[in-house]
Amino acid sequence: MNVNFEYYKIFFYVAKYHNFTKAAHVLGNSQPNVTRAMNCLEQQINTLLFVRTNRGVELTPEGEKLYIRVSAAMAQIFEAEEELSDSMSLSHGSISIGASETALNIFLLDKLKSFHMMYQGIRLKIYNHSTPQAIDAVKNGIIDFAVVSTPADVESPLKSVKLVPFREILIGGKTFTALGSQELSLSELKDYPLICLGRETATYDFYNKIFLSHGLELNPDTEAATTDQILPLVKSELGLAFIPEPMAAEAINKNEIVRIQLRDEIPGRNICMVYDSRHPLNSAARELQKVIMEGR
Image (tube, rainbow, N blue to C red; front, side, top):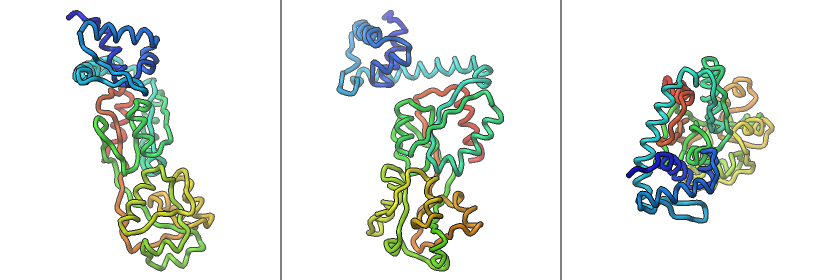
């Protein structure tokens, strides 16, 4: 077959985004031209590749087979292009990252500082996402990769790499100082106001499962939008809260808050990197990945 290679390139983006309009936008083309090209490809190879749905298009079984081969070829082409322009791309360019508040505060900021000092010409776009939102952004090709806290529900072709473990502790404001010399059980927390992240976050899901495993219901009095909000809420005496230990250390040392010991163990969590194994990264993003993974 003597098929126009441009058709396979267009096919790759339509299959990647499951949408003719998105593919056209990425290619700098028009939706009718993209549709026409895919009709020509299907005619030339005498195979139905797409089925239209309300949300866009889905690949047929034959389309899936072709996409596996074409995406592998495109990955090789992108990689070759990046290798040829490495010297230029590390002096300018941009990287898009999704980061949860916890990951940003206790791990990622130091890594970004190191990277920026080495490659000051690279623009960094940091999106503040919950873990589920960041994973969706990786899946949809909106960001290059994500650095988030577990639990992270990752399915193929996405991959997750653990970077650093962390633990969370229970804290309270000065009015709860007497609790600092006691040891509470999870069941006893129902007697105190509790602060937690919102129900759409991985952290809420994490603690909800812990409470359920003890036959308890997680019913916070205050729901915060971000981890950064929790410490000020605790200092303002709105209740007790679980927070990553590194984020609470300074306030504990200054006696602004009190650490409360728990009889029940809270499982450890991890900061992890989530990326799409089929999505080729530019050289700047690959270099940032290396910096992030150093020392793990």
